[in-house]
Image (cartoon, rainbow, N blue to C red; front, side, top):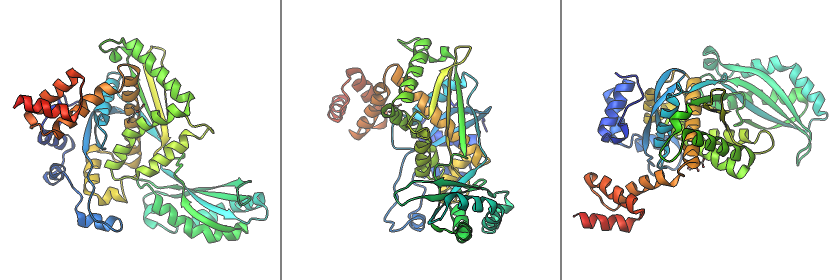
Length: 426
Ligand code: MEV
């Protein structure tokens, strides 16, 4: 069993051999490796029990990003995504950061926020006062709802009350129940606790409770990642390391200052994040919602990551965002491949998973803005696109590379050209 995620030539291996390498790295059982090998691991009968009105199962490629080293540990990262270049980009960036000692990451305790909307309070500030004075009763009631969560060390921790002085229907209160969800994402547990405490909150406040639901702006559950890249590692054909590092900092400055660019910059981050979140059976919409709300927390939408230079001139990137992911509950337990993905990652807790996910977001961001700052994004994309076209044109596996090489050399990347080249070859 090897514990280095630096598996050279992984991308060139036949798929079967890649599965073997992942199996060896993560100690997967034969049955788990077979799930990867067979392609579609979610039986339709199981899918039928997951959502309503099921007619089939929708597949996505599952790739493995290599080279990741986080807090001194090596990880192979499963990513479920349809977009070419993402897995390659993450692996490439992870290799650059490896040269600077790998990523550092840490995260907050898994505190979720659940909200009660309280309307029709005569005096919002007096109602807030009364609710905060009754905090212990509310917390105790919330903690009667999920004994297992309490046994695992989780549960309601605190109550906060925000006065919303103006809204289209007048003043209201937002009561926040801060809830430690341990290794769960927490939505079900928090929503149950909120529904349980709503009548008591209405009585104490003298108001009327309407919504009782988790907030996806999980800003008490942040994950942070940092990458340090020696400038020499950034040098490439036609560009000095210094030039690329400066380009990356300038690209960041654009995203920091302009919401049109920030949206795309953050999309690049989410390319990495969503793919791991999805592979591990987590709710990627929740993560998306939290990320973008967090990116706009200052009143103006901006970059989620920051890039600059340290005293030694190294390029340094950091990323911080809400990361409500779980390793238990929901699809993490139901989807057979989510289980395998978690085993490949080898994470011991939801916090560790959150840290890995944040790191992959930062890696993806580095890959994208490095390419944009140097040769541009199309060169890498086009090679992958050419590959897809060669396959679509019916190239047998032993001819794909040759067809791709011709199209890239000619800079004509089209299906009809792939077909022509194939005809010429036969
Ligand atoms: C494409 O999926 C993502 C990028 O647009 C991200 C970026 O512009 O930073 C390349």
